[in-house]
Length: 510
Image (cartoon, rainbow, N blue to C red; front, side, top):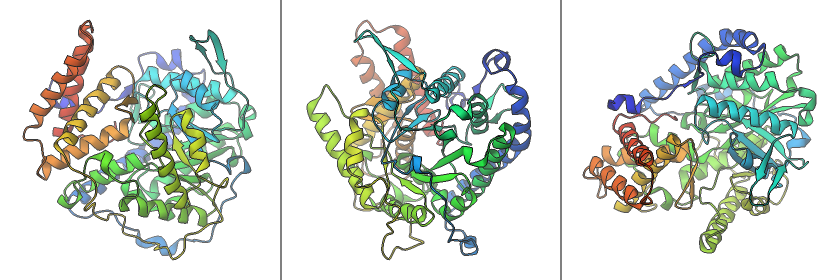
């Protein structure tokens, strides 16, 4: 297997006959017109992303659009009452029925069921995620609790169920003659299967990830228009929250929200994907070499300025501003780790609330009450920060923060190997050393290693290959003596894939 084969992006491909066997009757015909209308536009948008990244690496970094002043700024949406309180949105992979039920029974104001970063991008996982979402929306999803020997169901509640589709960077093969945009497929399949009358609030609630420009909001707006028209739904049958996870989008928030205002109810600062994107765009800049990830303070300026700008833009237009995920996870087996994780959570969410965010994300039911408690009101829409710079510098160099260590390099190598091992085992989110690692944090670590190779410093690996070998050998030694041979082979494959992704510059989300 060549290096390029190892590092090549995987395509989610439906097996032969999947359209007839796995998808609802009539869906193929319903979908064809959507593919014909929107696939080519999506390809153009993805091509423009590559151009923007290339220009950044040549020194022309993203900045604010000159057309901002020509856009109306006094418009407001009518925020539906049913989503006015989103002080905590629990998130997790849609293909894990037990976790979905536990999240929906946690008491969280919102739950986001994920078809993207925390799920392996393979056909069977995608299908199962869709099936679980449909059952959850109907209140029919269950799991069997072996410890208590009983079936657990979703309890009735006012929790808003959000559904994160895959982003434009991903394609779905095996549905049409050519690959089709993954978000278009996910949106269409969800809409085709749901009964609007049985949905809470008669609304399909979508989370859109990985947008990179205001122009992409027009594509998404037109997709929502077309799906609603095809289903005979009113426009307000679809509501959307969008993640701010790409550095270029941070400079186009006014334009993005304006373009999607018919459907948009809020923005979410997806901090870990945003950090990865920021590193990716500044990869050529030696001033942007970050310290070890877990030593970066929560109020680091490149986050804090965006945390302050995002609520200002959202509240000006009547929309919610939601903060990101805290990666350190509570533990019911380790009291010290649990206390530390919950203390970090409280400080992190308090910081977001002080920035006038309206809520945050968590991934564990034990985090819900603490997260909600940091936000004193259902939302802070009436609050605006005083004397805010409407066009702040969103790339303040990370000087004199955190620590850069040899152990930090090794921790990054261990994490990417173990994370990729989880993906090869069917898990796209893994609890590693107390931190919940998903595609975004794996991408951060790969990019941090690449930074240190490109801009040598005191703790740049002398030989990346040797460090990968050493950490793989350590992991293999730590396996139980009776671990099957295929488990060891999976770790070796994960090590090879991870290193090759770094060496060959494969840093787009995948």
